Length: 542
Image 1: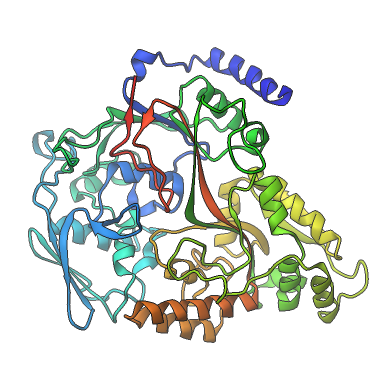
Image 2: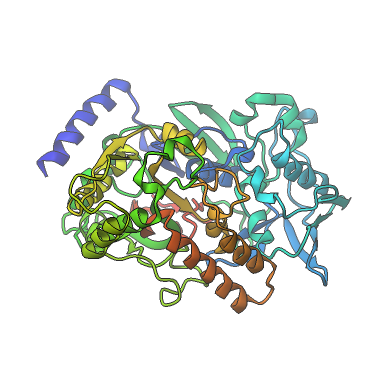
C-alpha cells in the first residue's frame, strides 16, 4: 500500500497547485472521465482509435448501430431493404433527426438531417483531400461510380460491387457518422475541434490538453420505454491527465465517474489474482468486467522485400512460430492481468464472435521444447546464434513485454524491449518501420471479417501492419465475404484464420475484457462487447 499512497500524495500536491478541483455542485449530473492518451480529433473521418471513437459516439449518429447483443439495429435509418442480388441497399431515414444548433447554420439553428448529408459524409471518407485513415473501409466493396445516392430527402441507396455481408457493420463505424457540409465548409481544418453532429450530446468547448465539455442535446430524437427523452445526463466532461496516478486519485476523490482499465501500479491493490475487488475496495466502488472484442498481440513484419527485415531472423516462419511457443500466456494473464482476459491460444479472431471456435482454429501454447526445436530447424541451434531482436511497445505494456522477453531468452532469443510513445509506435507500424511490435485490434463491428481484414494483402497499413501476403488466405477470405450462409461463412473465416496462424505474422497474447471501476452513484452505465462508451441511458444519482 505504501507505493499507492506515495503516488496519491505526490498527485494530491500537483492537483492542489493546479487548482483543478470541481465542487460537487458544479459537477451536477455530468459524466466525467479522463482520457490519458488525449483526443487527436473530433472529426469522425479520423475516428481511428478508441479515444476519438468514444467522443465521436457522443456527438454523432450513424445510419445503423450495434446493440448490446451485437445486433445491427436502426439509428438514423429507421429500416432498410436489400435487393435480391444483395448488391443494392436502400435505407429509409427518420425525419426527426436534427443537427446541433451552431453558427454554421442560418440563425444558428440546426436543420434536419437528410439523405444528402449521408451521401456527403460517406463520400468524404474516401476523398483523397480529406486523407481519412478510414478510406480503406469501402475499398473494393462499394461501386466506385454510383456508390452512394440520395433518392430523395429520406432515402439513400448504397450500391456494392458484389455481395458483401459485413457492409451494415461497416456503416455502424464511427467513420460513417453523419456530418453537415455547412460545418465542414465553415470551419475547414478547425472542424477537427469544433464538432457539429446530431448525437445525444453537443459540443461546448475543448481546451486541448485540459478538458473537453459536452452538454445534453435538447432535441435528441431517441426516447426511453416511458417516452422520456434521452440522454438523462446533463453532459460529459473529459480531462486529459497523462498520469494514471493522477487519474486514480481523481477517481478516489469522486472527481471521475469511472476508470477504464487499471494501471499495473494499482492492479494488485485493487484486484485479487482471481480478478475480483480486494476487501479494502468492496462496497466502495463497483467493478465491471465484460468480454469485449479486442485482441492484444505482438506483430511481426513479414514483407521480405522491406530492407529493415533483411537481417532479422523473424523473416523466417519457424522463428516466428518459436516466438509463439516460447512464453506462457496463461501465467501472463494470471499474474500480470489479474485473470482479466482469456489466454489467446486459438486464432486472431477473439472469443465473443459467433464464428469463434477454439476446436477449429488451433493457435499456440507454451512449449519451450517445441520452440527450441523450431529454432534449430531454422538454423539457430547453438546458444547465442540468434541476433538481437527489438520489441517495440508503449510504456503501459512494458512489464508485459519484459515478461515475454525474459521467457524467450530462456530458449535462446535475445530480445531488447523499447518503450515508445503511442503516436510514434503507430507512425512506425503504419510506415512499415517496426519489425516486432505490440498491437491491439478492437472490433469496429461484430464480424470476423473486421479481424481478418488485418491480413488481407490488398489492404494497406492500417490495417495490414504486418504487410502479410498469402494468396491462399486471400482466396478463403474473399470467398467468405461472398458467402450468404452464416454457417458456411464462419467455416471459411476459420479456414482463413488457421492459414494465417500457421504463417505466424502475429503473436496473439489474450482475448480482452473490458475493466471498469465505477462510482456507486453511476447508474445505467453498462459495458458492451465493443467497449464503446455508451451514455444515453446513464444517470448520476445524488
